[in-house]
Image (cartoon, rainbow, N blue to C red; front, side, top):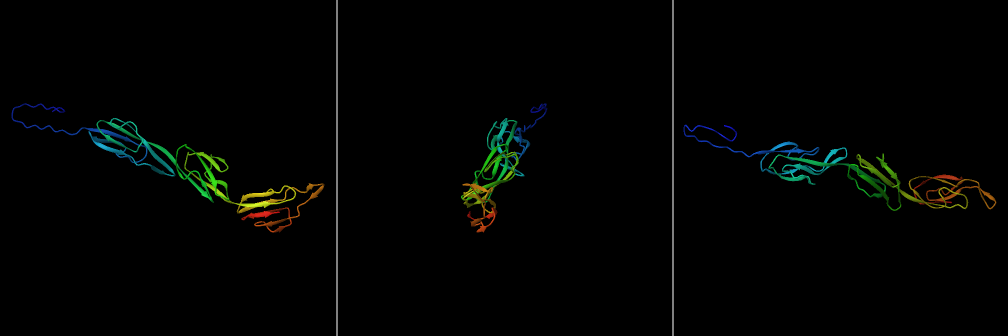
Length: 250
């Protein structure tokens, strides 16, 4: 017997049966992440087997890192190139299938106070540049950015950075309060007029440098009158006010 051939002498009656089996071919699957079907490695399948090759998508690896399948490359009976996480194959030759992935990181974007961000929390593709802008609600002001601001470019209420790692950022807003300042002389701080300031924090108020010369006379601040968060009266040229309501200082 040699392969598919048999040689035998016809010295007597014989009954010979030829047994056939379907040829098998390799489907070699590669994927750096995920759980493909068929599995990673060499899969032996019968000739003509039709199957739907698929891989789970997306894949979370923990720590805020995610992988998203962008398609596949193939050879043999596998079409060379596609942009989904599934491909139908009819195996008629030795073939390869390699799943392709993009890596992305989780951006946790949060707000403290009252305001909005132009970007919700989401997974962002690696090295993608992100620009977050904080927009305060009426009668609120943006205060500062909190969280992972390392190697980011901060310009007031706008922060720019590349997604080279998972990030958690917080836009902090504070309520605003009006402080109306009046003074016949000098350069007070805050300035004469209506000042929109952060509420719920200490604000230093001063009559400014003294004495003030005007019309050939010198003037010194003798004190103040106040309303709201400002004490109703005081006898100094400076005070510190916990500004938690609209107020006046004269």
